[in-house]
Length: 371
Ligand SMILES: C=C(O[C@@H]1C=C(C(=O)O)C=C[C@H]1O)C(=O)O
Image (cartoon, rainbow, N blue to C red; front, side):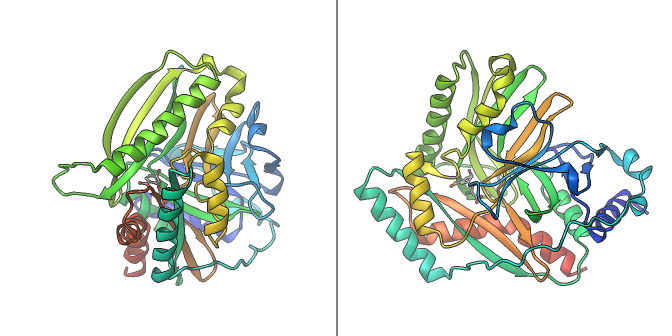
């Protein structure tokens, strides 16, 4: 058996036992990592700043709520490469008594109503203090009896430059995604955070030019990062970008910010609570945009535009914003996609942008359904 088949079989065995786990691979790294636990290893944190002093795999929602708690899977069985996977047998683990997944309603907006919402958002931006808001929608896709392990392998193969994950946690459910956006990542003694915004379809020739709308939108996010740095007394720092970053079927504008980790020490949890949600997924001014999102979006974002990743495991932090993701229900995949609306937005283009963002996951689903 090739390694990929073994790994997909491994994932399917964990799912059969309904075990809580998080599987992931880092951008441009090919080895699999997986953390497996039991029900009691999943803890529910009451607030974003409660991460200080904790360790494990974090799965955080966009907004804290009863249906979407902030979860941490504590370090239990941690496998870090193919060799670890080969020597471990999920068949030996007991079935988890984690309860069935809650069946939820998902509000699916049609194109006409989405375009109307984007029009309304542009009008709101022109006449109020709101300068940018991220509006999102859900895209359903039929789930047949394909192997989820195979689907995860397919997504890993198609998007090697993303943080590709599959998470199964009681209360949150089953989620998969391939996100390009770093929230906070350590490189030895340095921390990196990123401002990512502006989207266009990926080009075969990689010869990208950017419109003012995208350049401004990304600059808004960078500006916000600097405000947070100021509040946490982070200086000096270095920057790289803005530069084009390709991911899946789209490309974005990205600036990376680097600073010494010792600037934060035991305040890392507070820093994350200060950053999240960034204007890349919410808008500006942040609280006005957040209120507007509650009003305009008829669906619950749950973990989409939240963040996830290994937190303080082996002393490092690798958190990503939960984009290009979907919730797996027994009969449907529910994809989440959105885009930043500014005064210069064109509704039809925004609709297309969400379609382009969803293509990464849709093409992986199609590939495994057509085997
Ligand atoms: C909101 C999403 O992506 C965010 C919005 C972007 C934009 O508006 O151009 C670009 C990257 C992300 O920060 C999404 O993928 O759903």
